[in-house]
Image 1: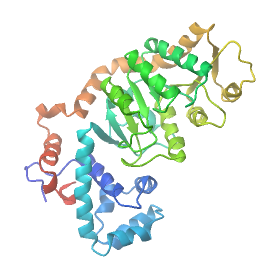
Image 2: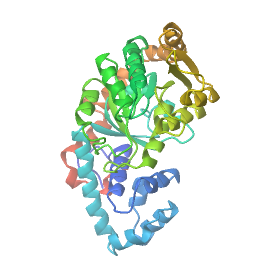
Image 3: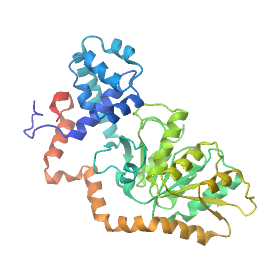
Image 4: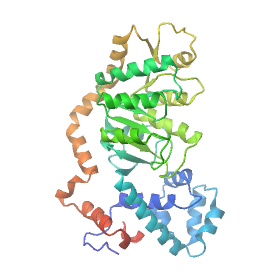
Length: 372
């Protein structure tokens, strides 16, 4: 079956995205099940093309889904009818995301961040709202407690004031406290900032962060999540999310944290990924300060502020310069990538663009089998 515009089938990655969204709409199929499907080597579209409810449930069993009985009851015996209904909802969700500037990039696509390819537990997809191209730039993760002390506030504001010197985007988690300070300081310094969130991309968490999210995207930044669009928060989600903050970044600065707090997970992930960890301390802090003890064990560089500002800035330059040089040489490629992402290549009249255009113009006329 063709899409009716004479250009063959719809692009593979568009179909995988809609299939991913379709699966996410089934009650009982959550992030971990969909991730297991991807890790098993099965395509999302392949799973949806199951010819019977038994075949579909078998795919979920292979993915170690724990709710197969509930799902079997939900879809009933007429799997093909249920699948068509879900597919239409998946197409609707695809357009809802697109209308909000949210794209999905998959592990196998060229525009997937190379730095996240290299971590031990890479995401299989990312939902990105805003500027996808900055995921390829040198990055500095700055994270910390939701309840900063006066010391933490001073150090966070100090780092924020230095951002213009580093020629790198910032990474944080949109949480109250240190994270939001860094996002706001980045915007003030005209530095694109990336917020990795621990919920689905359509969830507004924490409450009251909607305006900051808009400002991040408006100023060339991005909101990123690997969770399913409507997925709520959990402690497990935030811990799992932290590996992405560390993985995307070249340097990690934990501003104020505790050995058993959420930030410590990001620091440990950074150590595991062999990223440079840079910590700051005030002159009156003792060497037995709780966060510094773990930092020393993990080989972090520790600088006293005020007093060692030049050493701190030089250390960051050393870690970011090599990637900055590459980024400078690849500026043209980055611009081409962003142009492609934004759909501005229509002038090229490529079959891929025309196929996506067919989906945009006639979403309800396309079935699962109109896709490669």
